[in-house]
Structure formats: structure tokens, C-alpha cells
Image (cartoon, rainbow, N blue to C red; front, side, top):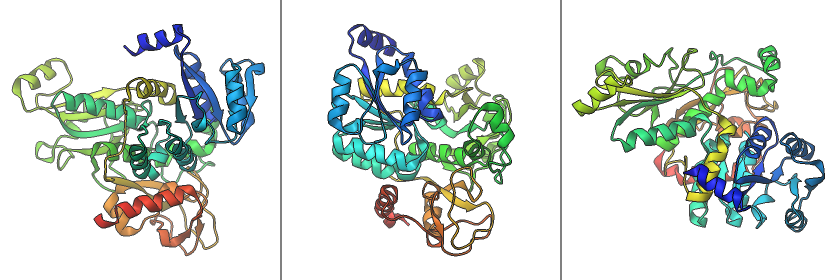
Length: 432
């Protein structure tokens, strides 16, 4: 049992020593979650805003006198050897330290996730991404590089893709045929949402307006389901998916095969649903061919005799992520990693007319949103991956609602993230 093993590490004073990137809402919550667990400790917390990293440690109960700032390996190791905790502005530092066992990226920045992962690969340190944006943008090349270096690469559980893959693995192990996988969206889809339109909602829950808008405009959902598609092989029914209304009682019939009155043209689709009954949860719809098993599932109230659905009504995001870190460190267990070839991607769509010279802002902003589509369609359109959109400069006009292509913008070719994506695209150019 994982709990027993963690308790043993605690009793032996040999906790799993974690380095983490990110001290924002996610990262500070992650630090607080780890502080409550036996057998695990955050040794290093990195953020460009070092004061935020210090504040995250303090909020998690770390005494101020224990927190030391360091930006090089020598001083950081000295501090850790003296029983201190390290805050740093360097996302690559934790990977260099012998006193760190495993590293997690707990941001929503593809660039930070890629920087952290590359540092881990270079220094032989296992990496757990709570950052699905990084996985969707450059996960295939990072996974390949990690495998070649003998480094474990995994996306964590807690966010919907990891929770979904646990359900998928459960169903596949039992021999059930996967028909559909997906999530319940927490709010109604409005692709035109901006920080202005969600400002009051964000204020009520104490969250950043840009991040809130990225949930409402669908960009976050598109990242999540693309991550799940690339790990499971499931495909969206259409660009942007369909997003029907559903409840736990109706979702199995809704995503049954077309010949049985449902939406799925073939087994293995990915989608999201709307409606309060499934908000925040994840689901898997399966078909069972063996009559006895189908009858038993119906008796157990998860099926209708042919189709069954398994629904987890919550996900705990960064609060649950430490469990994936523990499994990765103790058992070399991968929660989620992309398949050898991409299934889907997230296209950049203009929220309004874009003009030459404009700089695209960020996820949940005023200039673009993300939409999921098949990877082969993204390649055909030369669509700009939405993970590369922040900071890109518009070269030629793009009408609102249209796909933003690579040729429509200038990106920073010196950026590690762009270079990784270029390498990734070269790997799959033959499949265009």
C-alpha cells in the first residue's frame, strides 16, 4: 500500500525529496498538499517570482528561518545539507541537486514545463508534469528524449487527463471495450470569454481572470482532452468536440455507437459534456460483449445491459498530484504519457480580427482561444499550436474565428519551447 510505504519513509526519516517549479495558485497549493503528507517533502521551490516561492513555503508552515534563496547548485546543496528549504528563480536548479529525488512542474506554462523537463532529462532526474499544457505542446518529443536518457516522464493524476487514464486503464484491464472518454465541463462554453467578461466571477472565487477565462472559453478543456486523446488513442468527433448535455444516468446511452442510437461512429472517441451533474468529473463509456458480465454491471447500476459508464465525480488537480509523484518515485509508475504518434492537437483560433504587428497575449486573453482537432488536420492547415501562441507577433491579417497558422505569425525561434516543437513536428512530418 502506498500509504504504508510513505509512513515507513517518514518513520525512517527518508522522505521523498521533491523539487517543484511554480509558486502560483497551483504551485502554492501543491506545496500545501505535500506538507500534509507523510514521507514526502518539497525541498526546492522555483519561481521567477522568488518572493512568491517564499510565501508558498511560509503558507505551508515552513518557518521563515529555514527558507534560503539559492540560484546555483553549490549553495543550494549546502543549504539542504543544513536542513534548509531552497527557493530559487531557476527552473533548472532542482534537477541538478543530489538532494532532490524527483521534480514536478506545477505551472500552466508550456515554456516553463519544457524548461523544467529538459533540465531533468539532461541531469537524469525523473519528471512529473502537473502541466498538461506542456505535455500537449511538446510532450511527444520530451517523452522520446526522456526514454532515450533513461528518465521517467509522466503527467500526474489529479487533473482530468490523469484521472481519465486511471479509469481507462481500469476498464481495459477488465476487458471492456472503450467507446468514449471525457470530462464534465465546470461552466458553460463561451469561446468569446475574456478577462473582462469573467472578472466578477474570478473575483468571487479569488482566481486570476485570465485563467478563469481560459476555462470558460474552452482552451483549458481542449488542452485536457487533447492530452487524454494523445495518451489513450481516442479521437474527437469533430473540431472542438460536441459538448452535449449529460448526466451520469444518460452518458452511456448518449455516447453509444450510432447504430445503437448514440453519438459515437466507432469505438474510441473523446468529448466533454455540460451540465451541473457531471461538472468537475470524468467518465468512461464501455461496451461489454459477454452477457453474464453485462448483466452483472446492469445489476450493479453502472450499465444498461450493453453499455456501461464509470464516472468519477471529482478531480483534485494539484492536491492529488503528489500521489503520482510517490508512485513514480517508489514504483517507476507512469500515470499518463503520450503514445508514439499524436492523435490530436490544439489549434489557435482568433477571438477577434487580428492585425499585423499585434502581439498575441495569453491563454484566456483577448486575442485567441484553443480548439481541439485531429493532429493530421492541424498539420494540413499548418495551424499554430496554441501552446506557442502567447507572445507570437501577427504578420498578416487573420479574421476573427479563423485558424491562426504558423505563416500568420512570427514566433521566437530562439525559444526552447519553439525549438522542441520544431523537432517534434519533424518527427511526424512523414505522416502528413
